[in-house]
Image (cartoon, rainbow, N blue to C red; front, side):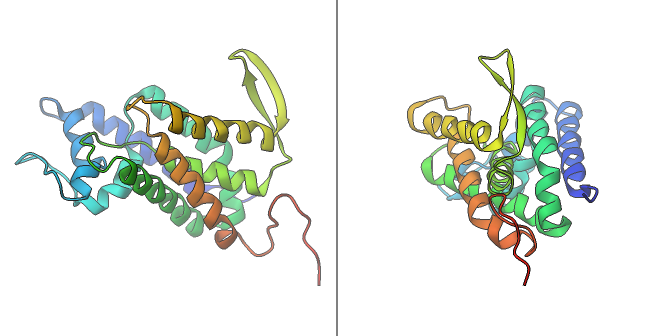
Length: 219
């Protein structure tokens, strides 16, 4: 397997963004960066405006910049762990440039679905969860039978095929999006990233890479 340079670079970029959040000068700087560089649906759709003098990107660019920001260390650590575990294999199946494009397109898909579900929201969406959900969908399509480690009942280590572990995780995201009203988690962004990743994977992988663990057929 080739060295996953893009996976490493994305992890470093998210870490750098978190450090910037912590040490950016000014009062309430962390909240200001989240507002200016996170994706706010009402600002994206033009029904609300950011305060005067707030440093910010054009609304359409926040569809991508929000992917690099995280609310806290636990949010960052969880996302980076998933990217570290699953990103290298997906990057190897796609190649560096395609994987980079794939990652941000999955983030874009997640951001757009979230914005569509909450068009009047004034709360910034931040985090790589949508993009990483796309990576998880791709991994599941590529390596469903590979056994991975997980935790059952929050403490029992288990070693099961990815199709069961990640399939259960996907069902959890869908159930949470449909039945939880917690506004602090972008469940629909997760589902948008999953759908985008599933749709793009056949287009982005190398021709020699089989889907669903099927062997290639020589001609």
